[in-house]
Amino acid sequence: MHQWLLDNNYELIAENTEWQMKAQDVIIWGRKGESAGAGGHTGIAVDGQNWIECTAWYGGGNGPEGGVIISNHDQRWAMCEQPYFYVYRLKDNTNQSNDINYPTTKENSKMIYAFAVENGTGTLLFDGQNTLAFTGKNAKAAYDHYVGTYKAIMGKDLPNQIKTEAQFALWAKLYPVKYIPFN
Image (cartoon, rainbow, N blue to C red; front, side, top):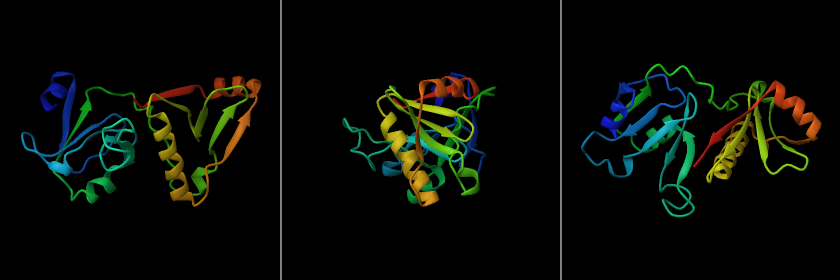
């Protein structure tokens, strides 16, 4: 995987040293050419602190339930005894707009809520800056993780509301929906 990333316009930006995580960074735990056992993970950053990873730790492993989770990278890294790691970033990647805004304090969470549209088929998330739609076969797990993260930080359930189709049409002009795939 290391060579594939280098051959496909990624560059190594950190090797077992601190770095500023950005959405779309690819993080690989475990030394090249060695098995890291349970400490060997590969994931992709979804924002400046969280990553999506495949793990047997949650959700049934690699079976039909999947083991795909979004978690705080540094907490998971510490939990796994801080394995050696590499970080790759797409060269000239100025598109960092897929960051998901997780609340960090009660003050900056007032505009974070979920909503549905009358006669619609899904739930959307407004993170204070973006309207997000989680898509793909793991969308529900990703959404449930976001809701759980919100509750853990805020100590309350994520607020919900229903918008009429007319309200949503106006809303979508101001805050176009960003589709984030979780396949």
